[in-house]
Length: 335
Image (cartoon, rainbow, N blue to C red):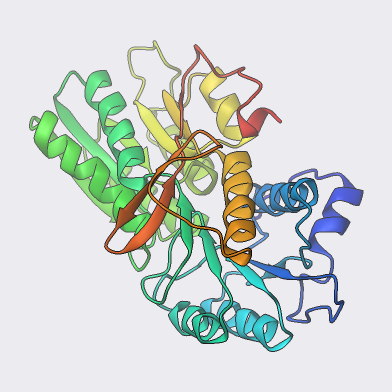
């Protein structure tokens, strides 16, 4: 399944020009390189546009985005190529926190600050990791599902790739919360590995062979359609309020996800604040390049910086979306 998202042509051309290769412009005006994990889903495409817009607003010179195209080795090489061309700062959206470490360490040796966005690197020195608190996102889903099931039943936990911190933390936040607050709920955890095809396979297998009362997915963009299809195939796709409705909560916040909330397919959707990720990432790389102090505490963009294991993390709040607030204009899926 490939996602199609209508992005204004001029905006897309501006943001992702040359993204199909590792070429980095030699322009003396271009100082910051942005490596994104993929442009093959709606949220990442929007993230590229939002970072470009924030860079323009702040007066930060940004190269055309480097598209890793889902390949950690390519992302590592892209970053190293950018460093060889003399960039002054790096924003990286890592595919694999371990795989990106050599590139981060090379940036450290060159004195080039690195800011990660959405997920983090597992080594090297990063000036700031901009992300949601992924454990908290999982806990938010736990609270919604635990309440919907009145503390009893079985839930399918569709995990992301456990090779990265995002997949691990979104799953652990959910399962730890269930164990602590809803011990009467059994969790069936299966990896969907950020793959629609894998999600479809796992959801169909589990829902057709196991008595499942609710579903939690670490990614709505990946799993909304596969889970909906699997529920339909076993006669359990019914809107919120129907007697045979299966509670379904996920993380992302795309326009399709918001429509699923409106339609009663999703009980809750935790919206990653892509616009605020972009704002924070550009803010921190600008600050780091200017060698201004970075420390714990509140930020100008309404978040809180914490120091965790010697590294700074800017945790951006992510709202839970239900039918009550699904039309809120500030949600990125409504923009």
